[in-house]
Amino acid sequence: MKEISILGFAGSLRKDSYNKAILRAAVELIPKNAVIEIFDLEGLPLFNQDLENQPHEKLSEFKSKIRASDALLIATPEYNYSIPGVLKNAIDSASRPYGDNALEGKPVAVMGAAIGTIGTARAQYHLRQCFVFLNMYPVNRPEVMVTFAQEKIDPSGQVTDQTTREKIKELLESLIAWTHIVTRSKNTG
Image 1: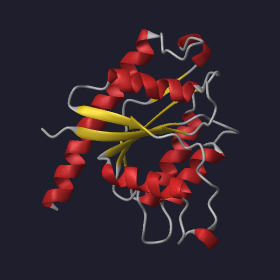
Image 2 (image 1 turned 30 degrees about the horizontal axis):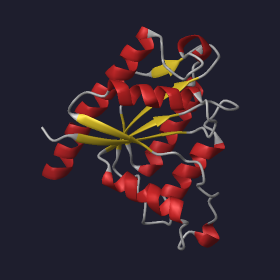
Image 3 (image 1 turned 60 degrees about the vertical axis):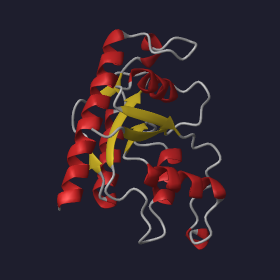
Image 4 (image 1 turned 45 degrees about the vertical axis):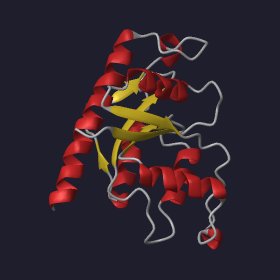
């Protein structure tokens, strides 16, 4: 089977972000039949509909990388029971202008890490609502919601918890299998 290319990005700009750490773990754990490229949202300007037909260079690069990938992997923090503004801005920007949605039809997997007991569950469910309008194809299981991230990710940013690493690997395997199904369906549909 064809090697699957996955574009990963985190909804956090923080240098020592737990969500960036779980993305790096995904790169370490990716099966041999896929590759992950990480895109940093730092420098992506705020969406402004007045300027959507003159995209910033960083946005053009982001949309190009989305289109070139077979699937997406998003790591989201949870802020105020929802997805962070950085991630919402990236999604809004990548889906505009109307008729130029780079996210359309993309298989996508979501994971998240937080210091509390919920582990980004609310943010992930909110993000899935966005996928409906964007016509994206999310992986349903496993759900990777890393609770008490400060106990599972060391100060150097390494995911040290074996169960977390196994769940990330399971999610990647599911995303790869799902991407093959979605791609096959598109090609025969």
